[in-house]
Amino acid sequence: MTLHIRAPHLANAPNSSVTTTARGAASMPTTGAPAARHLAAAILAGLLVTTLIVPPAAARPMEPQPSWYAGSGPGVVASWNATAGAAAIAACLAPTDDPLHESRLYAMTHLAIHDALNAIHARFQPYTAGGAPAPGASPEAAVAAAARDVMVPVLTAIPAPFPPSCGASGVAVVEAAYEDAIQAVPAGPSREAGVAVGQQAAARILALRADDGSLTPLVDSAYPQGTAPGQYRFTPGNDFAFAPGWGAVTPFVERRWPDLRTNRPYDVGSRRYAADVAEVQRLGGDGVTTPSARTPDQTQAALFWVESSPLQWNRIARTVAEARHLDLWQSARLFALINVALADGYVGSFRTKYAHNFWRPVTAIRAAASDGNRQTVADPTWTPLVGTPPIPEHESAHAVQGAAAAQVMRRVLGTDRVAFSTCSLTLLDGQRCDDLDPVVRSYRSLSQAADENGESRILVGFHFRHAVEDGMDLGRLLGDRTVQLTLLPLSGPHGGRAAAAGGDGPEPVRGTVLNRLPSIGGAMVPV
Image (tube, rainbow, N blue to C red; front, side):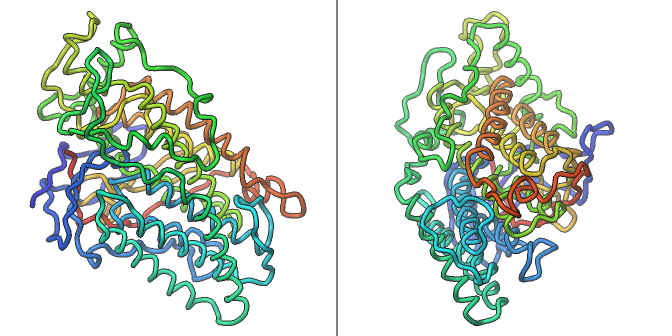
């Protein structure tokens, strides 16, 4: 089977505001490896709809450990974060398949890790109550047991349309990592106590999330389509709406999303709406059926950020945690806060999307002749760079995700001046993280990366600017409130800002994110 990524050959723009290093050659089309199991599912993928061929487990290698991991010490939490990403890929959730359950997996895993460590030495408020103090327990064993005992049951319970074999592949990644981690801890009472405290923390998280609504159907072919201008209808190539019930999933922290909403979609007859339509129409085309005014660098950025937000922003966070020299407890808190914000961002965004039920740019542009706005110009064959996801438009969940993750890191670290480079799994073959010489994009600050992440949704043809700007505003509010409301530093010698951020010096954090996460068979395709 041959899979095609519809995009022109990418090159560097000479005057890009973001430093880009291009390595390797791209080739199209991409041919998937022979598959033992087939998953033909149109699923949201970092808000990209894809069809996947799932190869045997052996074809999906384990993600390399962060460079600072040595079996113990501060890199242990980051190592398990990388393992969670590799497990999500093996389980068919990432890099472009189901960021909703992926975000839930990461949030639950890191909350359990956080609570286990703080049962050993209390430095931050726990997320769940009831953990018994466990001084003398091995932190490494506790982290491993907490991560393993959350991920195995969560991956096993991945809902349809994913087959059980996907979850089994993810579980195999986790079990292998757990065996290695436990063997690295000397046998004895400390290891046994660590395993026990980790298992207890995982059990509390699992019990708390047992009936959180996350088993809501992902594919709803009976979802009612609108007929009036502005009303959502199925996007081209799709005969269903994706996860319309996800907005009813229980949030981890943020339960006031309706109070955080800013503006509604623009009125279809307004000048501001017409300006947004014209911008996407000019920039978001595929460059084949529809001409586009994007620069080569903008095209690369558009494809770069198609990757699942939880996967990308956790990859970035690993580099930041290492460069900032966060210890085990500080790293555990940072990853827990980021992933709680990401998970709650999806819940809130999907609630808003299906409440507004606004049409996507591809629908708006093709139907502009009947929208009642004299300033819009119809193009019945307009085609976006990547196939549009089957969910309503406003606001951009992807913009929420990037802004929330960046804001959490800004608040925890006390600075926006975090310089880093990162790769992506949604560029062309030869340019991705798992290739020998990947393309990396470099950023001077967290906000610069979040801004480009949001802008990419216009460039790829998915969103109007108003939806992106509202998403960015909501993401920043969500990041602030997440840090303000949960996992707060305790008073005492380790309390205060130093405990939260490992110091608040003005120096920029520098690092490169090149953890080569495997793609699934090296191929993905928008449908």
